[in-house]
Image (cartoon, rainbow, N blue to C red; front, side):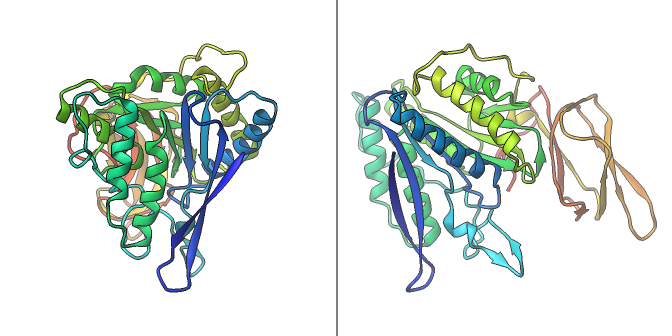
Length: 361
């Protein structure tokens, strides 16, 4: 194992952040997998998982079981980890710019210098060169630049997050239906949500979109890297028992994709079928009040099903919270105090009824 320390500038003179990346295997020896967690620094299940995975990979490497190359970043956002105000941690948005740490990754496709003879190695080189030429004028830009450069070198990218209260679920691209379905089986993901473009240039989607746009610009077919988001249940699901289960699933998947040697087990079936991200129904609060849930994520809902109600604390009126379309109820918001229009719950349906930006803020 090789540890690389990346120094990121702080927001004031005399301050800085240090980002650690852990590297296993030999360059060019096989598939290159990049895994990161904690880009939203207040999402901790993935941080625990990847620290466990690093210990296991170190042992496997010493025993000669790594056939490819792995880059692991267990804590991808040291800046966000420090953002405490009056005892409350806020790691989703940059405290200076208010930007979501998982948005606005660059579109390099228009400036990457390539021709129709481009292969995967040339595409990676051109994208990295275009990234290196971008100005970096803030701490959050330095973080994006460092993480994205590592991801652009990989064949497979997993960005590990968690939701508020949720079952394990995945976000991926339609281009990678088979590969995403295989990972969903190994991790036993409750929902697998695919699209052509999610909007907002989130980390994993930006990797895919850079290659897709280059493909369109050059008019050639490219072997686009697999890049997806893994949502490890909810923010409170920080448990050794769950991390051990997820570690086992990841190790089996890493053997399947050829990064580790050992017995390759066929991917199990995922609990739920793949559905379109554009088919997600978002249940919102029609007015302010106290949210009382009566149904937990992990249930299949019929159209018109009630998941709870919104209590008006002044007059005691209860407004039912309904899934109009029905589908697989996979996530809900932990905060039980809602303002008018707040997003409360998410149900994966089989139809397509949304367009534009498909991700929540």
